[in-house]
Amino acid sequence: MIVYLIYTVGITALIGTFARINLYWCVLTISANLVFFFLGAFNIWLLLRVMQPIPFTEFARSYIYAFSINLFAPGQLGDASIALFLKKQGIPLRKSGLAYLIDKVITVFVLFCVAWYGAHLFLPEINPIWFIVMPFAGLSAIASVIVIIQKVPSDFKYILKMKQWTVSTLSELKSVRYQWRILILNTFLTVVKWLVMCLSFFCAFRSFGQFISWPAIGVIPVLSTLVGYIPVSVGGIGTVEYSAIYFFSIMGVAETIVLSTYLFLRSLQYIQTGVLMICTHRNRNPKQ
Image 1 (cartoon, rainbow, N blue to C red):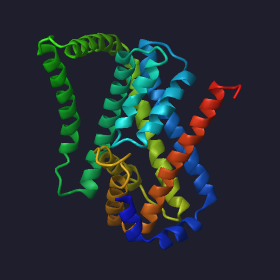
Image 2 (cartoon, rainbow, N blue to C red; image 1 turned 135 degrees about the vertical axis):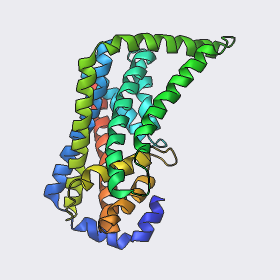
Image 3 (spheres, rainbow, N blue to C red; image 1 turned 60 degrees about the vertical axis):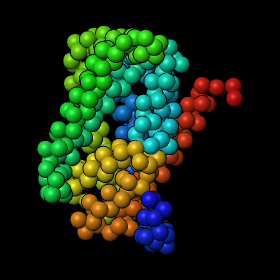
Image 4 (cartoon, one colour; image 1 turned 60 degrees about the horizontal axis):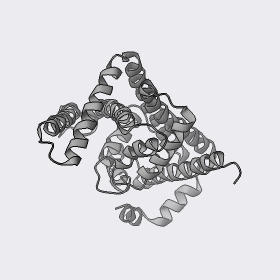
């Protein structure tokens, strides 16, 4: 799909747009992207350290690895691999998985609230109530799966392991619920992370000479990001850009600018993640 979009917009037009990029706004975009990245890591770390202390630098290494996998996984499925990397550091799956799940639930809830407001502006043909119902439907589905696992006979060792994992996870969840201050802080930082994402997109568009006003710069990136959660393409490539072109075209923004902006931001993700992985590897292996 991304190849089709590039072909439709025109490679010559994209090259011409990138040739006029503003370096000042480009640097601001890079800075906002880095802040967004580390806010995401810090948010999950806050939840995990309630259950099992771990230095942030060690956690960040696993987060970087998981984030890099997510760039090549369908939808946003690569995110969950952080639990596997943390397991190598002695963190049980039930603890890392629970921290990731709580953070993801809070993040999705915030994003869907923003999408609910965005639907009023850009999707009048869709009843916005669906953007509120869907997160609760997802939680209900998770609860249903847990109940079914507990009711299924434990004749198979894999079923037994799943039961043991759910019981231990629910036990961890009971300890987390008393840490309501951490949950509130995580929610607050999630809102801050969304604002930083808005700033990143604002600076990226300004890099190509396009001014996007509020609230469009706050809701359209969220709407397109939610489309990218559908696991039909690697890292949401193509689906995110296509939906962004549609929404921003409503505001009269040229598709060349929109596609250039999203390609710029996506390229930054790959470059920054690659640099962070190299730095992490060198710090872990100083003799090399």
